[in-house]
Image (cartoon, rainbow, N blue to C red):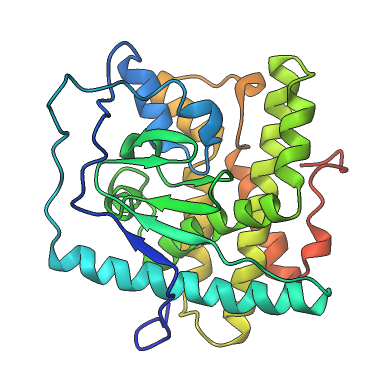
Length: 283
């Protein structure tokens, strides 16, 4: 992705090196659950964070990771990607007579406090609707390459754009409607709605990629990098790697094939109106 020398977003809140103060993740979740959580993208923080945080013993602050030159480069990259999503969605919202409220990207090390609760970096990147902020530990970009086997800068751009997709769902009231409906459903039905929410965020990431491609920001192979990242975080692939088998009724984000399909649809159409994942029988 041709990102160097481009505008960086001003909506960056850098909390790296700061202690969240109270969090120690571990106790009782089990290694399989932690692995699944770590591999998921875009998890619903209000559900996930309730399970993860535990307070540290009094007077003990969690260890923080030193900031290095590699992370400074990743910070610039994330800031440029966020700035480009701002340009795209400001224009899209303006064309429909609406005003786009730009989200803030919070960079943190190891753990963070949000309006949705305390979180460890193990939850992966997430969006909190309570404060309109995206949360990202930059070490996740390295995990994307090593653990997910999804290398390339555009794979990282997909991650940021996916979380911005959740922000758009929050602005449009989609998140509130989904959460209200889920409270009246069985767990399996609620999971199905969660899948549709996540696939729509993938679609919206594809819409952004469509506009980035039109502006000539994509290098050869960038689309393949994003598709590889979408595939890597499919529920079927995650479950198979974590436990050796898949349980479709427990999917919350969609299969690899579904995530690729909806990202590709956004990329090809560039039209947010084509992303109604809630009223289609075929995901």
